[in-house]
Length: 249
Length: 309
Image (tube, one colour):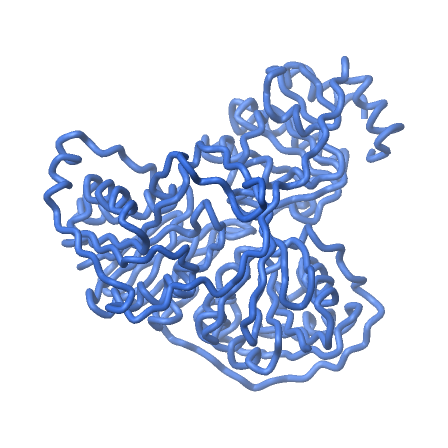
């Protein structure tokens, strides 16, 4: 069984982003970049499936500029076998990314596609579902447990009211939530080995997708700051303030 | 303009978040049609018909929609929605699940989790875990949007008298099936709709200590939430998580107990009207957003607060 894992290069989750002074976007100059945390969980799940014997090959794919090779190499060091980068300098949006993934899917014919539920930059939470629709595949989004059984996969999903389990016919799409697993770190020998693993580059023309952004970003602003309030000295003072000043209890 | 609002429900009652989505639809303008897809969901359709501002309710009643499987629902919504200028769903785990499929089937882009309507084609939405707010514009013929419920004041649940029309469209993709669900049973109000929310963090130390918060919550008619740290540590189930990747809440009163205030968590609660923080670490970032901070050991302060309310 083959697994395809789409990943994304994003700003490191420890970086506190700042909005640019001209409100054209957030300032990404000289900030640390990393693999999107939900994508790390997707790679980890694929590697665990391979270790369990259910999966024989893991292919990672990303859509982006050459710098994203760094994240593909990380995925290879974590246990993926091959990598593909679809080349674009554009800030690709989910529908275009989903179309590119569909082209890669048609070429690779994987049995399972595992990807992060959202990227921590755009917070869109769209790509997996869009790709699934374009490919006509079932989806198990926000997964906290994945069990492959024959030609089906059972996915336990984190939903607003608790947990839901669905059964999907393979091939299928799974998007990862935080509690699916805890990703490992790449070992130094594996980082060295990853440098020799194959990494193919496809052009936008080869996948037949126009990556020009269609949803226009008019401006990006910092959120309204909350003013810090006061420190109360005791529970009595807190109760008094909530009753008489804030009038919320 | 014509707006299709997808109703969120459990086949028995309309989820109140739908009233906030209808409010967002009113800001866009035009006729508002509510689509109810479910099984034996007639009562939901009747309820939706009474909501303020709704001109028509479409009811697609079929076993294929009983559990809101995205594969089936998306095909229905794409077929019904192709005659509308806007398709809106709540930014809940259900809306997030099927709406991107609808957009892909219609070959249009989607705008997730809008927090404001600027015009019929321009919307605001949080990005980077709420650390930036983007104003975006779409020129797609059909705009597919999910709506952050807490950002819009719900329309009145009563007063409308829209007609309910049954539509006989059965879409069963046959590639997925519902196995089961474990839903948290609670007599407390729903986290995203509660007027008061009390959340615990890693400072609670274990699940048993959350009992203190449940007691306090019952006294205040509050819902109980948690930080990601508390959920990851296994103190409470995931559906209690407040934060960018959990639930977004904006109650009248939010009480954060033993929560340090990671960006992730703040993104989920900083629109609350009044924020109280109880933490023994006076340097905790939560105090920077709190209206009232109490630097104290929560194991002393919470029982005392409980006793004095």
